[in-house]
Image 1 (cartoon, helix red, strand yellow):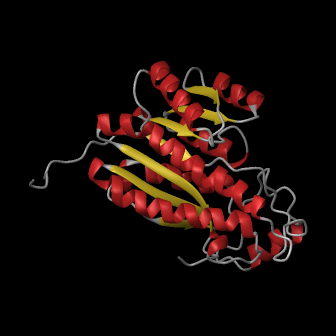
Image 2 (image 1 turned 135 degrees about the vertical axis):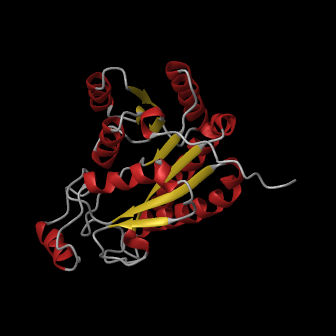
Length: 263
């Protein structure tokens, strides 16, 4: 079969329907606000943050829909996608896999090498990898139907620079990078791109609220930009991957940490 020379389908941000998992608080809230700011319609997925999700939806004047679902439950995710498509009258165009299993970036409280249990690793793999797989599989029919899709997975720079060895969290994110690359190979012919954005410590989110001030200062001092990246700056990269400007970019991991880690 000859390769097509036709231009692939493209959706401007203000015509997109974006599913953001864990989209009600922390980095997820900034991602939600970033896409709403560009005119996109947003499905704000949450697990427990009902009040925050509903507040975002109310303030959006009909542009956002708050929906509860556990991303580790494939049936719940499929139901969410079907309901969102019915509500907005079109398939989801972009997924931001941001949901984070319960975790705190507290180096003093992390499991050490001799105390790390498989249950900690399994919890992170379930939430990070299984969650991303569930959302991807749920949106694939709609993306294929419209000939367009953008999947953006949220990673970390810790698997390149494990300055604090969060074994469970980092292992799950590294596996998600592998899935990002293999999915990009599989879904490219459908005009579906799959990329990852890897941040470092962000100032400040719910997960980084336990981080001591001296750690923020150390990171800033060793970063070329001499400051710690903000959640808003991190969210800008998601807009890029969802946009027309990234139409030929897939299977990539973009590190957004002010230059601390060179990818």
